Image (tube, rainbow, N blue to C red):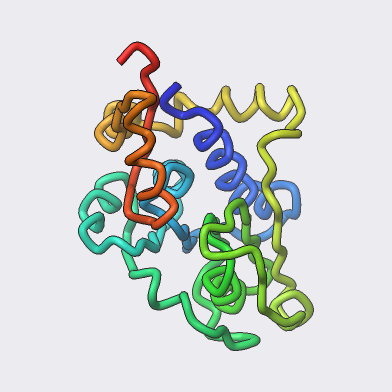
Length: 209
């Protein structure tokens, strides 16, 4: 219940960014990774998982007040979303071996320009917009791969494998600190704040509350 669809999406993103490159594509080790929207449900769990997988995670958030929390779940560095929410260059300095993007829009454009050779960007969200203003340069000069994540159509075999990894990669005691339980009626107040990017962590609806 705590993980839900967001947790499964985060698992897919983390394994795509790291394991797909290292194992399936026989690439070099993935060490430095970026996670956008790190204060949200998918982003926070992806940050934790990638840290458990041995990555140096840079968490991107629009909420500076969440910096300590993000570091407590595994982030090595925290930067503000404003640093990436701008017009992107076709190619920028290659900093990250891979990334998990939950935001889209200009943020994703900038993420792509900062990924090193053969890196994978797992994209699963569009909180900043559905349009992607980029060029082919990251793809044909650096061989960057943009990997779309869809949790709905994942096969049973893939689900069984990923859920089987949860015990090793998720610290539930730590994760529970970011869980907020609300009633169905309270969603009327919470949901608009989610759309405005003013919430963080995970919300669980208790139908008996």
